[in-house]
Image 1 (cartoon, rainbow, N blue to C red):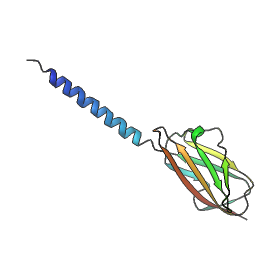
Image 2 (image 1 turned 45 degrees about the horizontal axis):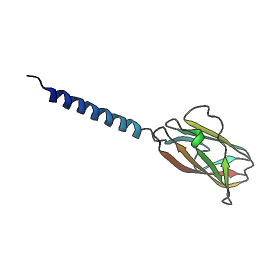
Image 3 (image 1 turned 135 degrees about the vertical axis):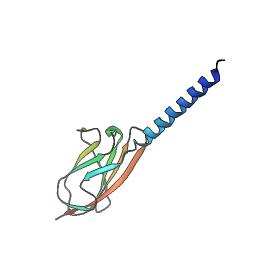
Image 4 (image 1 turned 60 degrees about the vertical axis):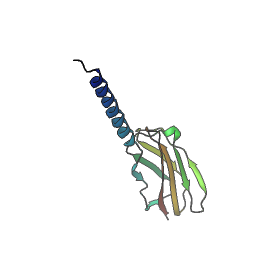
Length: 125
């Protein structure tokens, strides 16, 4: 006696398991900031400050946004340099005067999700 329904059930079960595996894999791909320079709440020497953001996954630099918020709340768009590593964004911040700044970042991860955040820091005199 053949059981064609058993084969179909096994095939459906296998397909469901593969879909669940793919969903878990994509959920792990959100971009999470691992390290930054300047570090959050740090004080750095100006006037020129290099920016480096490292994430847990590859990020799309072409669709990423980097902004510098000055002590006067002026917003300056930063240009990301060519990526040296697919999980890192670099930019240059020049002409910074002493005061409290914020870096605003927004990145696109391989799973299609956008992640954003802010990094406050000080420029010392």
